[in-house]
Length: 101
Image (tube, rainbow, N blue to C red; front, side, top):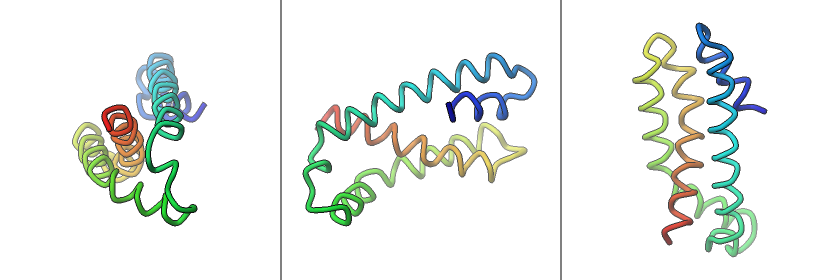
């Protein structure tokens, strides 16, 4: 749902295509997050604080890359783009990390 809204807002000239792409990306990120939650060693960490700390140690490159790519792509709205792109990059990074390790 959030992907639909963000896609429609981010691509104002083509709201329908933006909403469809945003929904597809959101669904993909949701599947990656579920895969991460049930298959990684972070899910088995000691409590919430241990899992949160291990997650931040693993996904910081995703935050940085996602924010940088989004800010570069949407240069006129780079702050909003970076704030939206950073968590998307982090979730994608965690999904790939959990599939490989």
